[in-house]
Length: 241
Ligand SMILES: Nc1ncnc2c1ncn2[C@@H]1O[C@H](COP(=O)(O)OP(=O)(O)O)[C@@H](O)[C@H]1O
Ligand SMILES: [Mg+2]
Image (cartoon, rainbow, N blue to C red):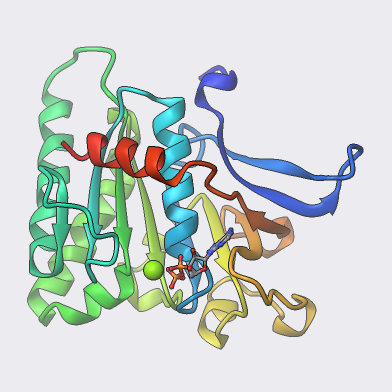
């Protein structure tokens, strides 16, 4: 797919100064990296980064749809058609998967871009009983494998990145990985990062981005500020309905 400004999604600026004295923008190309992750402790700025990322996605694809699994109900949207909290999150994943399967059956092009955002994915999987947790992991893995060709993408937020949240190998599908704040040992282990070399990230939104989960690609970043909160909330609410 050609890369033009239309499918560039700005997610952060690098901390390294560019020629203009400011950091360079870090972009996400959803066709290249259909499944992404944001990890960081409570208060590190995951949900804020997710809002900004989703909002920029919606600006890049104005007709896009959004499914939001907000396990803890912190986003506080009114129950939209595709907004799920707590016990309903499982149903939300199934609806997204069903849409993907339906899309596979029809050859119509173009297919509306569709983003699934799962906030607090690890907490959600831990909360489910064993049978449903296994089902959830395996459905997410199917989505990772097959949704890109249906123009469907995912982003998830977790406090600790731990392999047990995914089925074996599923995390290899993660394209851009945003790691915010001071990282836990588990997160460092999962991405083979040496904690002592990371440097401090004391403010919300400060962290690192890895490409394909590779420690060699690590960039220091600061997530983008949201210029107009009300406009962002409206855009997200609209994409949920
Ligand atoms: N890039 C940023 N710029 C300014 N404030 C931010 C930024 N990222 C996060 N914050 C603020 O930091 C606090 C924690 O962010 P939040 O996204 O709720 O964290 P988390 O989801 O990781 O627990 C919030 O008050 C949020 O508005
Ligand atoms: Mg949060």
